[in-house]
Length: 171
Image 1 (cartoon, rainbow, N blue to C red):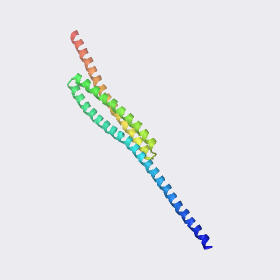
Image 2: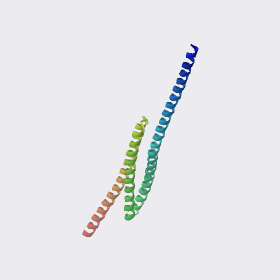
Image 3: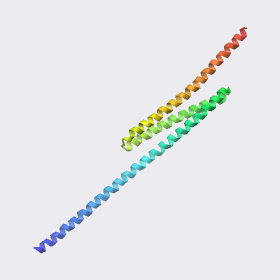
Image 4: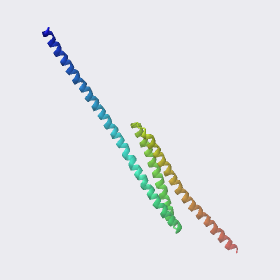
């Protein structure tokens, strides 16, 4: 009986070694697949995150430029330099439009990012992006109100001057 058991034992050992090698191969394959998936997800996140970061930086620069323009516009308004004032007002509105476009692009990129990864923190980031969009909109509306207010004052002053001139002619 010992002769029959030896080939059977060798066969069992061989099958056990083969199963271990096969399981090791499956584990390595799953590891490679997981690593590939993580690498692709990381690349996608980076490809989307970099433009979002750049756009936010651009918006910050645009708002800084708008602030500078607003100060220059008020100076040229007070000195009655209408051509410079109108040019600065147009620049302010141009930056306003560009920042709105940048924020729309950020929203689109973020939407793509949230489709790529499922993270509970995405909701808070989405809320932050909406807050930035609302603050930017308020900022641009306040700037528009400042320009409108200045133009209404100028119109009122022109009406008063015209009325004064007409009354002076009557006298």
